[in-house]
Structure formats: C-alpha cells, structure tokens
Image 1 (cartoon, each protein chain N blue to C red):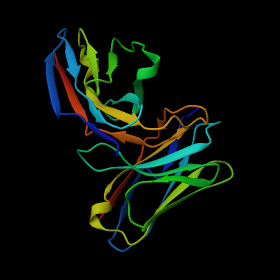
Image 2 (cartoon, rainbow over the protein chains, first blue to last red; image 1 turned 45 degrees about the horizontal axis):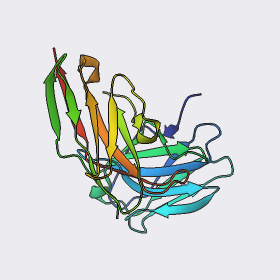
Image 3 (tube, one colour; image 1 turned 120 degrees about the vertical axis):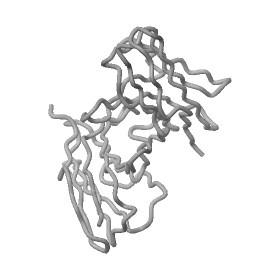
Image 4 (tube, rainbow over the protein chains, first blue to last red; image 1 turned 180 degrees about the vertical axis):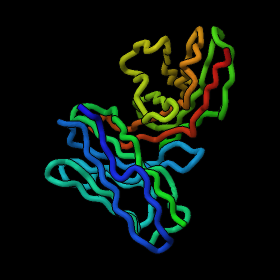
Length: 112
Length: 111
C-alpha cells in the first residue's frame, strides 16, 4: 500500500485564483481530513469528511471547501487565493473504527 | 475548546543523553493523545498513542491527567532521532475526529 497520496506536490498560484488539491486515502479508510500547515507551525484542522459528508470544519473562511467521492478520495478547493493561503496542505485518512490518522506527503501551495 | 502547547521550539542534546519533549493540553473531557514525528523530507507519521502505552524507537509517553500533560521521553537519544515532533489531541472517540496539534519541537541530536 502506497499510503495516503496527494497531488500535485507543488503548486504556484497568483492572488485571486482558485486551486484544487487532491487526496487518495489508504485502501479501506473511509474518513479523510484536511489540514493546513503554515511554516513554523503545527498543522491546523480544516475539514473532515466521512461517507461523503462533512463531519467537521475548522475555523477557515468559506473560500475553503471540500468534497469526498464514492471511492473515498477527496478534493480541497480554495477560491480567491490570498498570500496568507501559502502553506503545506496535508490530507489524512483513518479507519472508521480508529481515531489515529495517517498523513500524506502534502501539497505545497505558494501564492504570489 | 481543545488546545495543545509545546513550550520548547528547539531541543538540542548530545547523543546518548536523555531527551524529554513537553506537551500540555487543555480539554474538558477525556482526550486521546498522540505524538507524531516528521523526519527530514518525510511525511508526518504516528509515533505513539497514549492508549497503547507502548514504547516505539525507545520513546515512551505517559498521560498525566492531573497535570494535563503528555511528555515524550527517551533515555538515550540517537542521531536518527533528530526530527520535528508534534503532540496532538483528539477530543472524541470517533473515527477521523479532528486532531489539534501543538506548535512542534525540533530535536537536534549532536554526535
């Protein structure tokens, strides 16, 4: 098993643009969570999806949205990008019966 | 509200010396506590869960509910322990519930 995979690895966007990040969970994991990690800080929770429904949302503006597909993969969308959205975006997956989460390598987003 | 504090940004120790990474939390219920580690150019990976009470790579961590702490310890640090360490809390015993992370502690083990 390759573990959680994310694409793309790196992304450079301009202020005001929109971006879509993708995540494939570990096989058998039905829950996916998204985190934002700004340089020098710990990851901060954005969203959790389970069985294609949003189960939790962190303190992020409505410019951030996500969805989960029938195969449990997920996309994170960010509209009207700001310089402050520059960060490493992490996806994590977990089993239904377990609390611990397993992380992907992240997508490094740079907004110029 | 959930909060995790790691007071040390950087810990520098010599090989063979003990190392202790501090983690304090704030949560009104019974939390699940974790330590995650990130080695250079690798993904964030789970190191320890408090409920398993196990030792991984020589590291142990004890949950102290009275002091609301979950410090990570290793008696003899190795150079390969150099990494970024994050303490994390999950508030509900539900699958995939959000993790609240501390700011992280960078450990540097000198030869």
